[in-house]
Length: 320
Ligand SMILES: Nc1ncnc2c1ncn2[C@@H]1O[C@H](COP(=O)(O)OP(=O)(O)O)[C@@H](O)[C@H]1O
Ligand SMILES: [Mg+2]
Image (cartoon, rainbow, N blue to C red; front, side, top):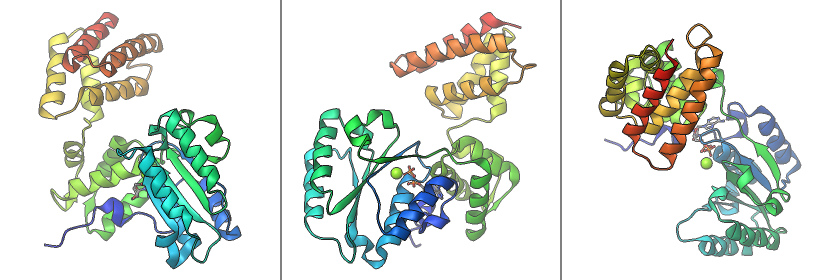
């Protein structure tokens, strides 16, 4: 059997116009293609929303068949260190661009660099301004030192909308001859929270189980529970039924295989999404406070199960 390309690669946009969402950004990048010039850029935003895809598509449109020779993609957090990154940049930047005025260096995960390493990177950027343009990508622009930010045009990528994601997922499903009903699509969109990489991966994983994808399969291949299950657990705690709430938690963590963090994130989402009848706003505020505290404890490395049980116990204080 032929090895199947991961769908996230197979369906990566080849051109800027194939990108979904990020309308303003795409328009700006297209204007750079028309003028055949780009500034240094900082792409900031969450995972799976098109940062790498946009950089690659931009370079393909600018360079055409010389794309491979004029475009270098590097991961800034390369475990061999910033020196290797700089050496690679140097080797690449030393020679002139092919049939173009400059080459493009795409540095992924730039915010993983320490500020010392970022200073070094800044000097490297300056040194090669004549022959290279840099595109840095990061999750949080606040983690990028000011001198780099001020040398770049900053683009803020947003989580993708449900509508855009649904449309693209339908297209992929059709091409792959996979049947997905509306409920399954909604489930994929729910679990991926605007992250298209995740959405496409979940669709592929679910379809490897059967060519007709339903809601159940989607939740079983993702590390998310159905919203209903989380809602029930919260309600049980708020009704003072601790043991039953704990049974739900056990089910989610041990049978569904969710991590403490996964469960916490979904509790947060469902508390926020609850309407006034389900959880009144005063209680909501109190619960958010509890979630904040216990989330912090999880991040600090406390035992997941104990902390989540303790969180449910705290919720019981706000018994209706
Ligand atoms: N805006 C988008 N339009 C179309 N596909 C997208 C978009 N964002 C992400 N994807 C899909 O998700 C995959 C990962 O996207 P990528 O650009 O690598 O995300 P990022 O660099 O923001 O983490 C792509 O290969 C593509 O399949
Ligand atoms: Mg990326």
